[in-house]
Amino acid sequence: MTPSAHVLDLFAVPGAVTSLGDGPGVVAGDLLLTPGRDPAVQAWLAPLVARLAVTMDSRPDRRRLDLRVAVPVPARDGSLVVEGWAASRHEPGTVPTRDLDVTLAAGRVLHAELASWVPTRPAQLPGEGAAGQLVHTTLFGKVLLDPCGAPLVVDITPAWRPAPWAEALCVLDAVAAGAAPASVLTRWSTDSERALLREAQEFRRVSPR
Image (tube, rainbow, N blue to C red; front, side, top):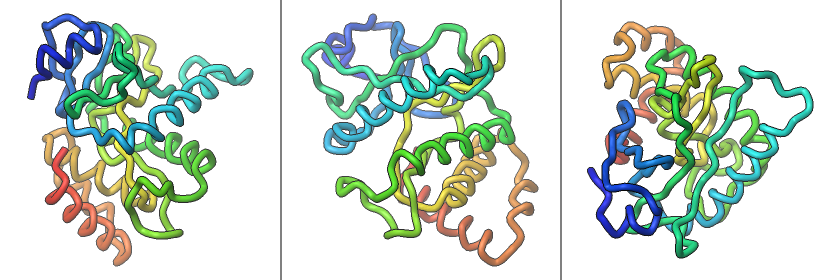
């Protein structure tokens, strides 16, 4: 899927685009553009992610290899979504990791941050009651590594579900992309873990990446 000339113009990026790993996003200039975004969700999510990114970057005890989050970028007219496309900053030299363990580790840090920043479910976000939290539903392929190996999470696609459910979704996506063997699913061996896998499979069936 390629953004239209109108989308590229409003985000002030060149027409030449390249794909980003296994997901539907494309890189155009210094931005990552991702389709299928809801304006109402982006209206509350983008400011939250921007504040989180700045806070994480400016902590006095920050280390070089600590997780970072890409900052959302509005279009020239101030819109956060244009024809379904949203944008975030793309850093030169970063590449998506296909290492499942690295991705899961980054996801755990991200979800811990999101749990503290968003303690209750936003009204704009459907999900499962009080037992959930804000999670990234397309984590696999959205963890980039810079030349020094520091992780950068891009394009947070939100849902209100338990963090282990998001991990199950990440594992399924990695297996589907051929980045992990199907045998990794055997790690999810308890009844509750298998239930999470089934729920994640159903979610991905009705909500493709």
